[in-house]
Image (tube, rainbow, N blue to C red):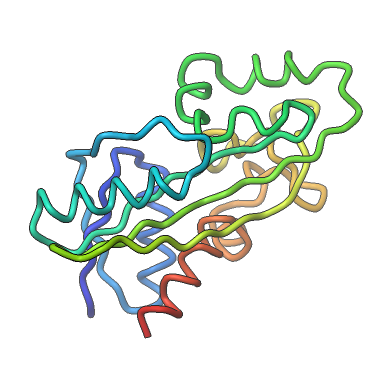
Length: 181
């Protein structure tokens, strides 16, 4: 079994990545030290910088994940600021901002950053299209999962097994694994 270090303090992300990569023969070890996050309008430079910084600090190959919810009616907001918005406003206030909006399409995006010590970082992007639900539904997942509707059910309703087959994070990890092989 191959081992990989995933730098994240997010328990939900760690659980998802661990489950997805375990099915591919990886043991995922969590490092919660974190990394400085750039303030950027896109996720790729944030993930690349985080991976390079963490790899250099730890002296190990690492992956990081920077994800965001991009709501079309809000010009892509919260996007790269998703963690901050979720922590400080939460799903209920995002839904409040969306009241009266008929255009509810959104994209969940995940960027996996990978770097080896002394190397240049690589990024692998996965997206999934959906809509913002009218209310929080489902007790599963984490973050925006209860308000992200994918084919008639929120990620919060799908359960980990189904979500991990179709999610933005799964799509980004699949690209990473394809490159790795």
